[in-house]
Amino acid sequence: MTDQIAFPPLHDPHPGELERRKQHLLSEITREPGKAWRLLPEFTIPRFRLRVVVPIVAAAALAVGLSVAFIPQSSTNPIGGGGGNAVHGLMLTPDTGVIGPSSVIRASLDYQPVPDTSASLQLQVKRVAFPPGTDPNTFDPNSEPSQVVFQETVPMHVQATTVTGPGDWGYLASWSGTLSVSDWTGGCQSNSIYTINAVVLDANGGGRGSSGSRWLMCSG
Amino acid sequence: MAIVGNLDVGSGHEKSVEPSDGDLWARSRTGDAEAFGLLFDRHARLIYNYCFRRVGSRETAQDLLSMVFLEAWRRRDKGLPADKVLPWLYGIATNVVRHQHRSERRYAAALRRLPAPDAQPDFAGTSDEHVDYERQARTALSLLEQLPSGEQDVFVLCAGMELSYEDAALALGVPIGTVRSRLSRARARLMELDSASGHKNGESTIQEESQP
Image (cartoon, rainbow over all chains, first blue to last red; front, side):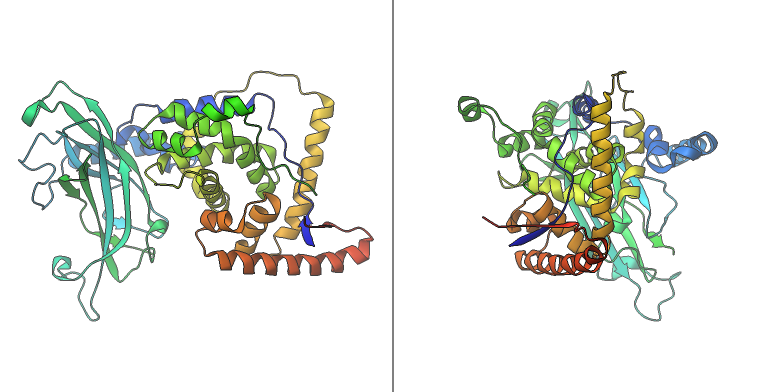
């Protein structure tokens, strides 16, 4: 014998609603990936505050975009370094260097060249805890062991470009998306600092370059 | 209560040439929007109904449906067994419902771009029917909300949407044993609640039926 709550029967939404939703879905997923400045207000501002906040955020985003257009990272083949025709490294919006437990960080990265039309991006968030008694102001996170608290590999959008690279690889790989701090193991811990690393992988899983964020402090 | 669990997928001949969920998912992972659209055609109705049963509002469930598939597309790097696409979508739907406000923030822009619906006559009978569905869903939710969230998830997936224990475990990312124990506790608790309230009202909100 089994028991059940009396759920309403399966039914269709409003007439034509599934088709309308499908067309909307297809238009959304085939949208050209936008630049961070264009998507910033869409992902962070509640609808009812848009009219007030958009101009402020747009100005701030423009300032961030101008000042943090290029973030070279330490790696064997850094994006943004001199090893290739990289367009820009990992960009974070907002890029205040401070995160909170419910922060949602907009991130984007462009990379060139990749050898074919398939590329993916391995994202990794690392946490370094302050040893007890450490002064955060003098703490060197690179000398301490780190823990991976989030990892995900996402496909990149690859398109042909007129700029060619080694072997005439005229392909530009782009990615933009969001990272939610609440998805990270352990969330945001005030006794730790965090960094986001991104590695561009080709179709064979080979690393082509990497980029990373600055160290992020946790607040709240 | 008998619940029909799956959409009609056509005649036997059509079925034999129809790509499997696994094929469509593999194509979706390479960025094939058309394949993803076919997965939407195949599973949207069930996901909508699942969301409806979790929130009790038709309008909200429709928006949640959009968010579930947008989220699935965002996570399309996920490798899935061929027959587990639907359970995985249920898992996404569960998270989207649970973190509804966060999901709404994430996809607010996309939802704002949803075109206005064409003006269509809403026949009185259909409208009344949906009002009844919403009332029924809210009654069910008032009981469900007295359970821990993990038990709510398992109960709606297994008892409401007729997922197997294995598929529910995949959807929720928990061991099968956890699904069994949560379902068992949920049923026991619901029976207690029903006997407490049903005896007063003389009407039971819990339906009992023989298991085949």
